[in-house]
Every structure is written in structure tokens, then in C-alpha cells.
Length: 193
Image (cartoon, rainbow, N blue to C red; front, side):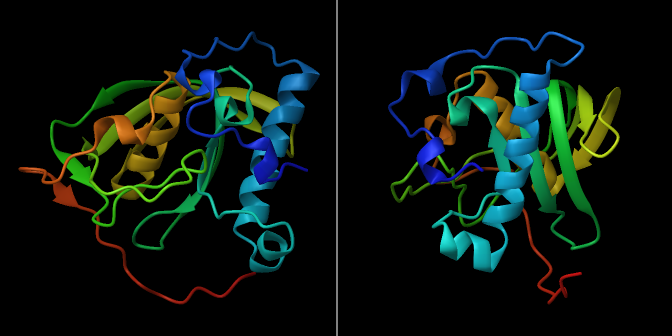
């Protein structure tokens, strides 16, 4: 089980490296890493487990954040309308197209690898298309996918893919974003299954 002690922090050299492409088919070691990444995200979003193990809640995790410089990311989040859950383990993800229109999170972004309070906003593409191999833990299958997302999920994926290129969100902060659209969340109480 991964905990916050496994997450490297701002200033660690691995966070500034361009991560290596992952060789396919996936090795057992890479599969185990992906499983641990998703387990961390699930645990971090579970109030009881996150409190017991002092986990900061996360919606995304990149392998470089656990000091593995490989192009793998995990995402576990809902869109801003609370309509769809995105549970993704992506290998060698690449943004293949994006909108001209920008968006941002009005409260700013956060990162498991950045422990300090950060003021400022980050402009991201409102819509992106990502090409990757997606790993399915249940079937143990890897398939090539093309994912089109917008809004909050687009921001999360861009944030995680930045990690694969040695970029942290604090590198792109601005006080004001001309022409960018804020992401507005619909507040609904969703009962856990």
C-alpha cells in the first residue's frame, strides 16, 4: 500500500525529469505499480482510510510522483457535473489534439507533491484528446484508447501528463487569465455505493 511517505515532494530531482516510455507488453512490475497507484487514489478518497493513514485526497497520480520515472498515470474523479466517474490507468499517454479555448480551476490547482500553499491560477486547454494504452486491472488487459474529455477531467489529465514531462503546476501560475473560462462544479451529495 502506498502512503504519503511514498510520494516525493517538490525539489526532488525525479519530478523534473522527462519520464521514460513504458515498454509494451506491460511487465508484472509495471502492472503492480499501476495497481498501487489506483489503490492510493481510492484510499485517499475514502474518509476512514485517508484519516487512518494520513493520506491527502488525490484525483490523479503520476508514476514520477512515487519516484518511478515512467510514463504512467492514474486518474480517479468525477466530472464537474457529477455525471460520470473517470477511473483511468494510462500508459504512455499523449495529448494528440486540444481546443484553443482555455479553462481553469477558480480555486487554483493542488498537487500531492507540493506541500505548500500556492496562490495563482493555471490556464489549461478546455478540451483535449488523449491517446494512450489503458490498463484494466480486472481483466489484466491493455488496450489502445483515444479519450476525449473537457472541463475538470481535461485539467486533471493535463496536470498528470505534465508530471511525465517534468513540469509542475507551480511553473505556470498566473494571477489573472484573460479569456479563460472557470470550471464550475455542480454541488450534489452523491451517496457512496
